[in-house]
Length: 477
Image 1 (cartoon, one colour):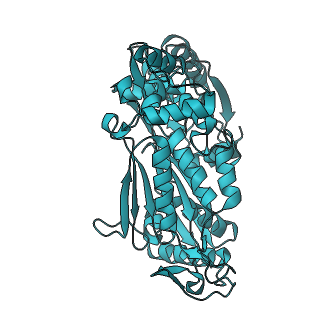
Image 2 (cartoon, one colour):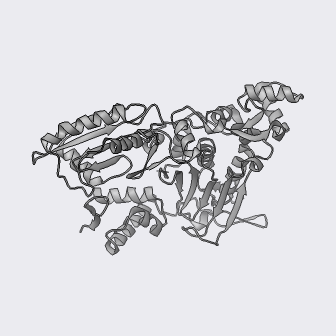
Image 3 (tube, helix red, strand yellow):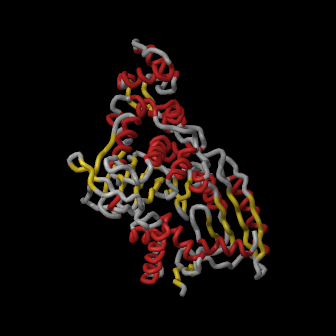
């Protein structure tokens, strides 16, 4: 790592993967920091750098002492021991910065000397203090999966007709009439526990009324007027419960009925086509239902606005997955039992890792955001302005509206230009405005704000002055 590399990292400030230390003298405190990084996605500690980004560096006589302290902390004060990497970088002043890299652990969870499990929380760390968080750590290390959790439901909660049809269509076998045979079959199918209870996968897939057993695992959908969330105003709202297939069908129908239908050159009596292909929402809804974090007791939410549709799933991207990786088709199985049965035809499924890429192929204007602190994953489908002359409205069984076969003439490029102009205007008003504040102000996704601001910087219209924390924006002529 060069001086320039260090300067670049310092400008970015501290976050969940980067931390600054002026000096290290307490091995136990360092061990807790390393355990937190190892239990999360790994990270880098820059020793010789102040919290505010100032670079005092270390004297040469301190380097040997600190490297020995790092070695002792990693091997003796963290359980299991960690393999870390250090690099000494000489500054122009002659002082030294130690770059300490802590990889994501393979043997999670890691404890400090006192048996405390630490996790990164933004630029800070915090103790694991709940069973749910501990389960999630085991889930990350592939030692445990939420969909195999036992429930309190016995096999009498089974939807016999749904399960019978599945057995007939997929396995070509009859439904067992005897309860003992039925239980044995469910256990062999990994849908019931050894003590005779349905596990979470069994409940979500085949229980008659899963919401009575797990009321938090439903989907809540709202159509808002405009582009922001209202406290009491909405145009359409519905909650969806039942087995996963029913939730999927009902949620998809809700989204489609709140999309514009456009003629797009079709006949005047045609029902029209959705403004966004149906396949996009098929893929995103399947992804939300199958890959959400079922250790988080919260529903999936669908928010429909004039300019976008948000599908918000509990749980951030697992393990080392990033938004860039899922866009490239990478995937990680969080709920393997659910995935195995969805692949048998219970939901539209086209192969592991292909859902996001298929959705992007059908509609490239989709933003994804993985919120580690809020434990949420959001897919935002951006809507285009629709020419009212192309919109199909059904009134008393008759189709009204004209068909011109032409688009409104407003392209995404022009929309993007308007957004950039609004960003520049907002920055002129408040040079310290944040990306979340801009997203709220403009009514668009944070990812869209980031993309537009990066474009403005590349084109020389905008410049960042100072670190991520405490810095400000400057609009250039």
